[in-house]
Image (cartoon, rainbow over all chains, first blue to last red; front, side, top):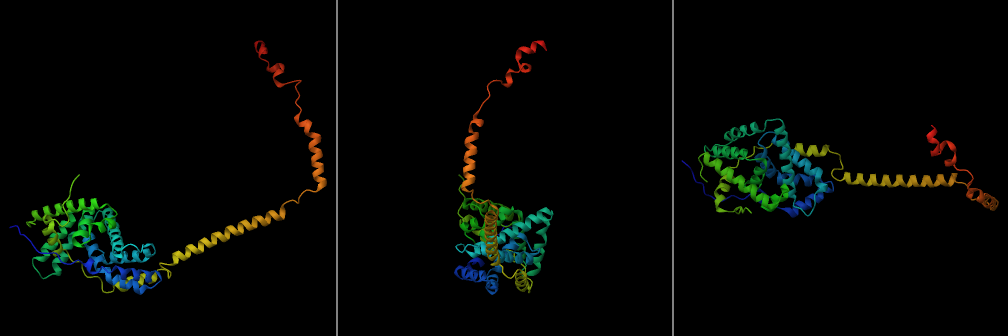
Length: 199
Length: 128
């Protein structure tokens, strides 16, 4: 029987960590060689980076990918424009790392298999009998989407980024963000309906 | 032009809520991931991320110095090997030479030209 779910969204990790003036100060300290400031930046943002990477790439080599994001950030700090938001810039790096990873997987022809173990991992982690089922379904739904559609949907609906910022992260017009978001949501809703969840 | 619904459209509210409530949670990172990251950063050259800027300054200064030395060396070499200015006597001799040979240079011998030689004349072709 189809189920209907109605509840309000929770606050996003991005907004909880949105402390840009402090981020800028930390970046300035980093540019003067203060690695401790970079450690604080890592502690502040790594959860969101990890979550985004997971939703885009799955669990394989997640630690390595997370480390790669922050290493690229450290190396690229000199090119960071102080007028930009550090979090937006970090999302951009995260998306680049995820994109590189998926292209590499595509070349190895193992992209499809990459998402299969995720549901098994989740079902082992939670004691709730229904929740892992939905998590598995969401993950399989995300896997149905193209890379472009999934990126927009993850950043907008799961990470709660505004469309304008997504456009900056992905380097595409806002209209394209809207279009991709619409198609991604339509595809997902159709997928959930097929799975017996009416939204 | 296609109009897409607002991102906060009620059409997609429940979908978005469902996604956020059931978003798969990333597995916990390795306990020492932060330490590994900071070690990896420590392993980078000490001047990251600023050394590259210093390197550019050093490179620029080296290029400017090199060009200066090259120019200075060339000027010094020119000064060493260039001939001294001609004396009054030499200038006078040169002037005399030009005056004496001016008419010779402008002289054109019109008594015989190459196209009058019989072997090139067109009227000789019949006999060939």
